[in-house]
Image (cartoon, rainbow, N blue to C red):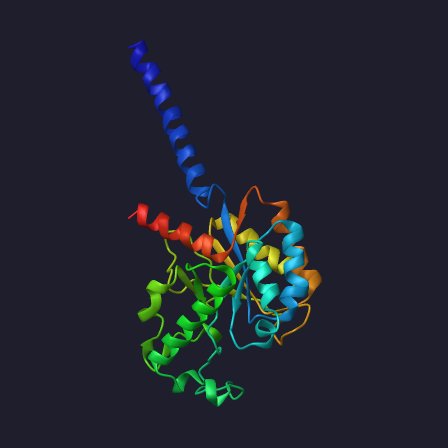
Length: 270
């Protein structure tokens, strides 16, 4: 009777310990941390080289830079982009000419020569693959991630990424969302496009990712100028300081490292 009583007393304790361990493991799914954050910067802006990379380097954090081959900020700074890659920042594919669909309201600014709605899938494939070759001359790497220019994923009704998906680890889209590791679609990972937010607002997004054990991808253009979509440098740097202060809970890594981790996790937990 005493033995049975002891068992009945111990059983809830054991179950509680198992539950606590399970919760702890599930909340630390991101490389042992509560969430993952990717800092991504689009369009090969000179401001990224001058403002962003020095801040990231001084904080020991790595960013992802989506580069388009014909942008002046890329063409005129090849050695500096190579140096950024050598220091562990990700050089990623944002196409050769950054084509966007011009056949919709608000897209009057699209250059007719690079109007995605007039592209063939083959032309897009060729230009994307050429960009991979171009980036490989800088960092020597074959593994790469992709970002959809303007968030456009289709030519007509055809998904242009599908034929080249095997060329990439993952693709970054523009849907404002953060998802758990099991819910992520590697062919179109959501991101938060930043334009005018305060440092406090950026930090609130990170806190939400921590609370929900999710992946948060920031999409920056201008940082302290350089683009019509812009965040003040001081506000950007508040975010960087917060991330640095909370590295015990937040996994900050290049987009490609996080995507590879997601891919392995999803494969191993099917």
